[in-house]
Length: 96
Image (tube, rainbow, N blue to C red):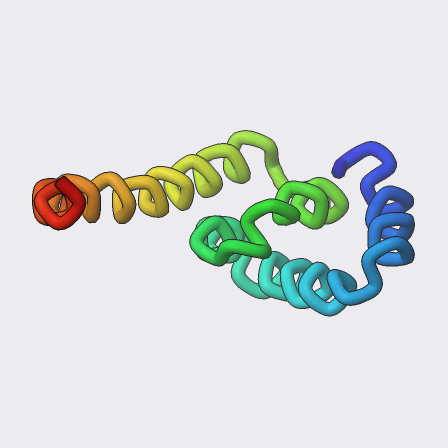
């Protein structure tokens, strides 16, 4: 996203115009909330896949972005692993 991300975003939104609003909201979230915006964006299904492009376009610090991103991904995965741990046996009993 840092090198050529602006051009890539223009092409992407031209090809997928419905995504333009989501990307614009994501850019505004990152501008206003910074690394917290990256962290929160990793918890939202559609936004989590495109967050790296706006972050690169805004030239966020790579280390800060990586830490915020990893923390968001960790929390996202923790929810699903925790759910599997808590409900796993119940689900298996239902189907076996």
